[in-house]
Image 1 (cartoon, rainbow, N blue to C red):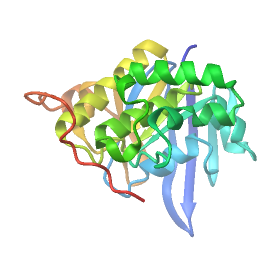
Image 2: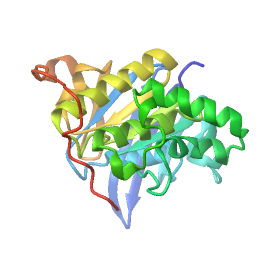
Image 3: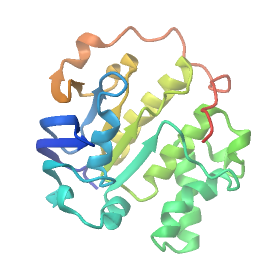
Length: 245
């Protein structure tokens, strides 16, 4: 399934009179992997929430595959059928195993249990965690939890993946593994992926980069900003576990 085309036109969003995004326009082609950079508080999360139908803009248009996301009053179907979310905090349910967490979006979509089991197994294998299918989140490292979260995001076969600081709580080795995994997801599934991060190491893996400054979005050349790769990625069992809610 091809990735989504995203078109944002003159998007503005304000909270209590404070303008967070101002007259933002850009487009993303199907299958692109794009970085969204900017300092904390610049509006990266707000923009992803608007694209994902979690909030509605003050003004402007968001079109995803021709769907007027900006005008959706009930975006549940859009979020279930088009978008996959990956957050800094993995939001795995602690009482469920890795496989059960991956199955959650399929339960909501009323996918038959046998099909859910098979797809969850395939997705955990894709993120190299098939051996941890029965593990609870508390027994997984931070990097492993985030890989489960990516597998869960893929469960609904999304055309658009929105990732908000997905490596913010990980060490360098686990971070690099997540970036490589997202690049591989794009290659295997053709998904359009927008990743918000302040980590410049992401720029080695993207097609291009958008930067938020002062509420406006501008394009920047990713290749000129990418740092040299780390000396080794290694296993991620030493990465820091993300803070719990």
